[in-house]
Amino acid sequence: MTSPLVSLELFAIGPVIITRPVVTTWVIMAGLTLFCWQATRRLSLAHPGRVQAVLEIVVGLLMSQIEDVLRKDPRPFLPLLGTIFLLLLTCNLSGLIPGVEAPTSKLETTGALALVVFISVQGFGIRTQGLGHYLSSFAEPKFFMLPLNLLSEITRHFSLAIRLFGNVMSGEFIIAMILALAGLLVPIPLMALEILVGIVQAYIFTILATVFIGAAVGSVEKG
Amino acid sequence: MDVKMISILGAAFAVGIGSIGPGLGEGRAVAACMDAIARQPDAASTLSRTLFVGLAMIETMAIYCLVIALLLLFANPYAA
Image 1 (tube, one colour):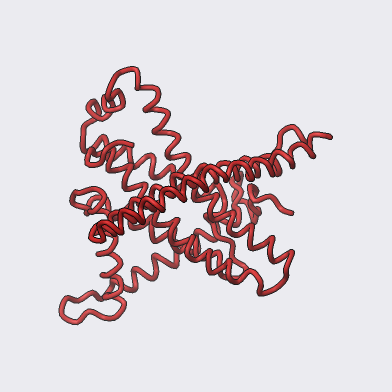
Image 2: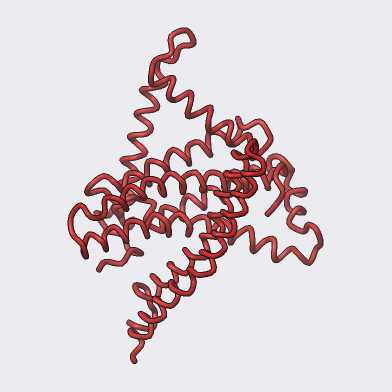
C-alpha cells in the first residue's frame, strides 16, 4: 500500500520537483480562472444570463455568510475567502473524477492554504488595528497569557491544515480500501458521502478562516 | 514483538481509543443543538452554523489520532 503522506513525483524544473497534486491544482486553478473570466466578460444589469444569475447567488451567499460571522462589511474579505472556498470546493470534489486525486488529500496543499490564511490573518489584524495594538492583543487578558496566545495562534492554523487533510485523505483511503476488499461499485455510497464531506470541509475551512480573521480585526471574540 | 508489530498495534489503538471521546462529544453537541432548535426554530441557521464549526473542532481530535496512526504506519522513524 502506498503511503498517503508521499505524493507522486512527475517531473522536475531545476531543483524543484513538481508532484501530482501541484499539477492537479494548476489545472483546477486554470479551469476556475478561465470559467470566471468567461462568465464575467459580459455582465449586464438589464439582461443577466443564466451563468451570471448563478454566480450572483454564489457571491451573495458567500457575502451573507461572511457578514453573519464578522458582523462587518464583508467586501474587504470576500476576494480571499471566496477564492479559498471555491478552490477548496473544486479540489475536494475533483477527487470523485476517476483518475484524479484530490489535491487537498495531500498535506502540502492544505499546509500551503493554511499558511496563506495565517499570513492574511496577521495582515488583516495589523491593517485594521495597527502594529502595536495588534501585537499587544496577544498579551490579553494578562501578560502571562502571552506564550499561550502565541502557541494557540500557531496550533489553530496547524489544525486547520490537518483537519482538511485528514478528512479528505481518510475518505479517499477508505474508498480505496473497500474497493480492494469488496470490489467494483461497492464504494459508491461512500463516494456519495465524500461529496457531502468535501462540501462541508470546504465550508468549515472558510468559516474558520473567517472566524480567525474576525478575531484578528477585533469583531469576533478570540477563541 | 518487534518495532513494526508494536507500531501497528499502536496505530490501531490510537484510532480505536482516540475516536471514543470525539464520538461522545459530537453526540452531546448534536443533542444540545437539536434541543436548542426545538426550543427556538428561528435561530436554526445560526445554531447549525455554530454546530458545524464546533463539530469540526471536536472532530479534529479524532483526525489527530488518525494522523498519528498514519505516521506510525508510514513515517515511523524507528521501524526503518
